[in-house]
Structures are given as C-alpha cells and as structure tokens.
Amino acid sequence: GEDVEQSLFLSVREGDSSVINCTYTDSSSTYLYWYKQEPGAGLQLLTYIFSNMDMKQDQRLTVLLNKKDKHLSLRIADTQTGDSAIYFCAESRSMEYGNKLVFGAGTILRVKS
Amino acid sequence: GAVVSQHPSWVICKSGTSVKIECRSLDFQATTMFWYRQFPKQSLMLMATSNEGSKATYEQGVEKDKFLINHASLTLSTLTVTSAHPEDSSFYICSAREAGGFGDTQYFGPGTRLTVL
Figure 1 (tube, chains in turn orange, green):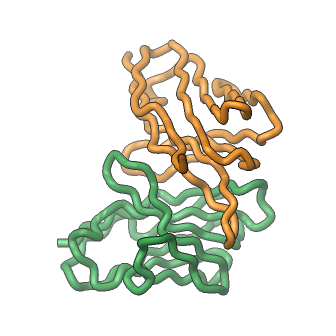
Figure 2 (figure 1 turned 60 degrees about the vertical axis):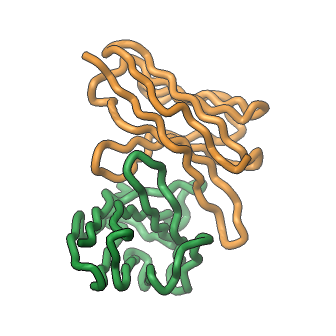
C-alpha cells in the first residue's frame, strides 16, 4: 500500500524500555526519520537513519532498520515521563517536484510513573 | 540551530474573513517550505510544497485559491486561508528544509491553531 504504518498506542512504566514500530513503503527512501510531538506543539526531529545503515544509536535512542522487510523501529531506553508524546516515523519519497516526507499516523506513548 | 517559528500561535476569526500565517526559518536559509494540516489525533496532511521564488505545488484535493502560499524569501513563507469557514478550523504546521542540508530533513514550526467561528 501507500501508507506508512505505525502501532497507535504504547504504555510503559517509567524506567522501562519503549519500542515503537513502523512499516514504510518506498524501498528507495534514502532517509527515514523519527519525530516527536508534544501536545499543542510542532514536530521535533529526534533522529534519522540513512538507508544503508542497520542501526543507529544516539544516547537513549536506538533506531533499527530492516530494509528487506521495510521495517523501522525506535527504542527508547530508561523511558521517562517527559518522553510521553506522539512519535511519528516518516519516509522520504521522491516526487516529480522534489522529495517529500510521508508520515505514519503516529504512536501515542504514555509513560506511567 | 534549525529553528522555525510560526506566527500567530493561535487565531480566532469570523467566517468569511481571511487569515495569514507566517512561517520563518530563524537561523538558516530554507529553499523549500512545506505546509501541513493536522486534525485532532491524526497525522499530518501535506497541503503544499513551496520553493523560494516560484509557485507552490499543491497536493491533490487542496484548493489553491483557498490556501494561498507565498514564499518570497529564503526565510519566510506565508499561508493565507481565504474566506475561512468553520471546516477550515485546524492545526496548521509549517516546516522548512535547509538549503544544502542533509537528506530531506524538515524542521518544523510550533504550529498555528486556527478556529473559525
């Protein structure tokens, strides 16, 4: 299909790890992104991964990429209450007029203290 | 770095009036800016892509005469919602892609909440 798909909701306890999954569609996507959105705010770039990488780690964040299955995941270690937000994955898609980002529906992460 | 601002952050207007929203890249030059619309508990819907100095490219189903986009400089794009109606009420978010930046990374503004009465 045309859609980028994500699990809609995840609830974890403070201190646990969170894993948010995403399936994308365009095998030619050069970059894949994770953005975070807090209530009433815009999107904050969390991290990205280049398509020739399998894994990228950035402090508490680990991104895993399985190109064969077009599967992307974001792991947040030691999840904190401040991590509660909506997380969007996005793929870069080539169009006639330039590249655009196509977003998943977002995963709501709730962290319980 | 890579800060994008939007103004106003929220606006309430009467039906039939026009509303202008500004999007500025504060510390970088943006060759391309994007306008999105987000409904409650939903993902972002790309409305249009604008390149500095040229006409915007609108996504299918978006009325170009209703949503006027101007990208007059490398740091400013505006979205004007003309003759706004209650169904135009939404959260509008802009983003900017840095000239010479890596990949297709977009930096987002904080959004503008539009309520049409």
